[in-house]
Amino acid sequence: MTSAATQQTFLLPDLGEGLTEAEVVQWLVAEGDLVAADQPVAEVETAKSVVEVPSPYSGRVLTLHAAEGETVEVGKPLITIVAESAGAAEPEPEQAGSGNVLIGYGTSAPGEPGRRRPRGAQPAPAAAAPDNRPVKVISPIVRRLAQEAGLDLRAIRPTGTGGVVTRSDVQTALESARPAPVPAPAAAPAAAPGERRIPLNGFRKAASAVLSRSRAEIPEATVWVDVDATALWDLREAARTATDPGPGLLAYLARFVVAGLKAYPVLNSQLDVERDEIVVPDVVNLGIAVQGEHGLVVPAVLGADSMTTAGLDAAIRDLTARARVGKATAEELAAGTFTLNNYGSLGVDGSAAIINHPQVAMIGFGRIIDRPWVVDGQIVARKITQMSFVFDHRVCDGGTAAGFMRSVADAIENPASAIVRL
Image 1 (tube, one colour):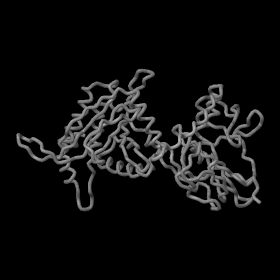
Image 2 (cartoon, rainbow, N blue to C red; image 1 turned 120 degrees about the vertical axis):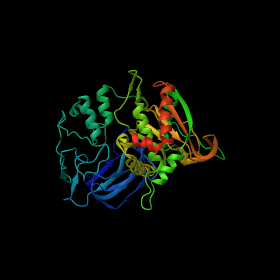
Image 3 (cartoon, rainbow, N blue to C red; image 1 turned 60 degrees about the vertical axis):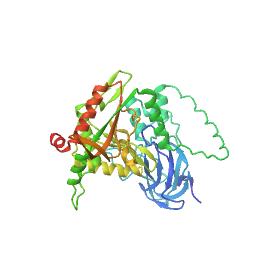
Image 4 (spheres, rainbow, N blue to C red; image 1 turned 135 degrees about the horizontal axis):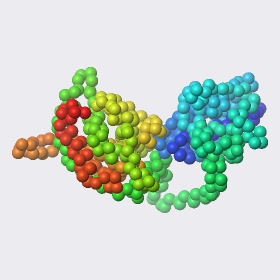
C-alpha cells in the first residue's frame, strides 16, 4: 500500500507575467510511468506561449490532476508522484534541478548548489517562523517580491497547499488586508439551436485585453504610402547563390525600420501617463507579428539595433519558427518596443492596424505585386508595396510620422546606398 508520506504533489507553478492559469495541451507522461527530476511531464498553454513543465520530483506517476484541454489555476495540483523506494533522494522544489529554468520554480538561485534530502526527512528551514514552523516558498518570484517589499517571510501567514507562502500571501501582507473574494463565474449560456460556442483560449484572451486597451486609451492615427520595391527585390535576388539564399526581404525591411527608429527614437517608446513622460529605451527590440498555431503573437528580436542584415535574417527566421509553435520565450513576448507587421504574407495589400499596447507605433507592409508605375515619364511594370504606419498621436505629430515613413521608403527604393550609410 502506498504511504502518504511517499507522495509528492506538484502544484502548477507561477509561470510569470502575472498569469494565473494555464491549459494542459498534452501530457508527456501517463499514470504509472517512471519520471526523473527535471523531466518534462506536460505542455501547458498560457496567454503568452506553450511551455514544457518539468517535474521537480522523481518517482512513479500516481495521478494526473487535469485532463488535456483542461485549465489549471496556479497553485492547484498538477501531478502527484510517488517515490519508488524509501532510500530514494527527492529534490526540494526550489533547490534541486539540472538547470532547466521555468519562471517561478525549479532550479537553484545563481551561485547556490542544489540540495537533496532523503524521502521522509524534513527539509531544513531557510528561516524559522515565529511558531517554529519551516518557511516554505516554492516560487522564486514570491521570494523576490517579499525581498523587494522589505517583508520578512517568517512573519507572513501561508495559505498555499502544505503551508506554502504564495504571491497572494505576500501581497496581502503588503496591503495589510485580504483582497475581496472573487465571485464565482456565471454559468455559461446554453447554445441556441444551430449555433456552437467556442471559448476564448489563453492567447485570444490576452490579445483581446491588449487590443481593447489600445483602442480605449490610444488616440491613434494611420498614414500610408505606396513604395517602389523593385530595386530592393533586385538586390535580394542578386544576393542569392546556389548554396546561400541570402537575407530575405523581411530582414532588409527590418534593417531599414531600425535605422528609421534611430533617426526618430520617440517612435520606439512608451508613454507613462501617470507621470506625463515619454520613456525612450536605449535599445530597439523589434516585435515581429507572427500568426502561429495558437493565434497572433508579437515576439521581439532583442537588440535588433545592433544587428546586420544577415544577423536580422537569422534572428527573424529563428524567432518566427519558434513563435509559430508557441515556443517564443516570455522575455521575447514581453520586451517589444516597436512592431513590424508583414501582413503581405497573408495576401493582403493594406491594413489599419491596432497598436500593440504599450508600444506607441507599428509599421506594416502589404504584398509586393507588379503594378503600372510611371518612371521617367514612361509607364512600366514595377514591384510595388503599400506601407502603412499607425502611431500614438500623443507622442508625436504627423510631421514626425511622415519623416520616419519617408526614411524607410527612401531606403527601400534605394537600398544599396541606404545599406552603405547604415
